[in-house]
Length: 436
Ligand SMILES: Cc1cc2nc3c(=O)[nH]c(=O)nc-3n(C[C@H](O)[C@H](O)[C@H](O)COP(=O)(O)OP(=O)(O)OC[C@H]3O[C@@H](n4cnc5c(N)ncnc54)[C@H](O)[C@@H]3O)c2cc1C
Image (tube, rainbow, N blue to C red; front, side, top):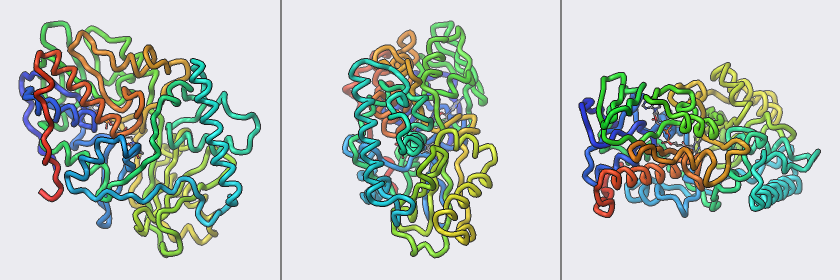
């Protein structure tokens, strides 16, 4: 557990937000010998990387998969810190027991999704920045389920997703997990970073030669700022800039957070189900959940809801998620199934004022790699305000490792702006060791 430090009165670099991006930035700055502090609104570090302990298991409420694992710097860091990296393949391509979807139909769905991706890629190669849903085949049976997949991938339907931006994501197809939890890993890697907790920033005054930052714990002056707030928090103007930064706010609004929600449940008689398998609740609509059965062999089910469905269910809280999951699973597995599940932990990222959603997608028309929302968001302001986070990553947006790499990028920019040689910085090797 990271202890909070006292708020200093002045610093070289203030990092705002202690999620993956902010912690990576803090590590990089500290390694370069730059005087820095991370200002965090919550009473914990990690942001959307957050693991809760229940029944002896680390349950991830946010990120769970080390996506694009062969290009993911957190894999090596996890191994170096002696975390248990699990290489069981994800269950997303198969419907357990072929329930409601024959083998042939599962193959058809896979082919339809691949063909859709190819059409999006073609449109993107032609420079078209349109709603990705324009590339659906009208009337095709799988459109609803493809949009349910979009709910999981983008937190929104494909109608809300730019072809150019969706195509820019660089999935390598390799996915790993951390048994202790991805959130536990990120927090461990950030444990030595100086963080002031419970310090929501409300105003950034850049009128003078030093930047004045107002927090709930008082005021701090900095030469440079690294801003890692979720885009929907930025666009919601939770932080006021003096003078205002309309371009930045507009760029953030072009890459809003969609919603994905998790409900972790225990299940009686778990041995009836294959370990690490999956069920879609329905196959004819986007309004359906994905159910990961027995993750890591645990007697549990992790339900995943995306997009409009997640926004709607969040309003009713855990009871609404549970009721929806019980109803879909009972339809598939028999009416008595409802009695076998109990809720253990539910995420509510949409209502969380320090997140306002799960991960970013770019709206149609704003996906240009050079002038679109992500590019404008990442543009330094006066060479002293640098923006980072999953939303500034063009190839790995929406992910923890994308956020991590962007935090490092922004830190190097700040280091250069301060006149320090970035080659002198090397991040510590042994911190975050869960054995230490
Ligand atoms: C349900 C879900 C599932 C996911 N699954 C995966 C996955 O499997 N793999 C993957 O790689 N990624 C996944 N992600 C995405 C991943 O968790 C995020 O992309 C990543 O953690 C974002 O890191 P960040 O540093 O950009 O932002 P955050 O983690 O949001 O960090 C921003 C920080 O800023 C703080 N903050 C907010 N407002 C203020 C303020 N006013 N003042 C000071 N601080 C403030 C926040 O509290 C937070 O700590 C998932 C996310 C969710 C929600």
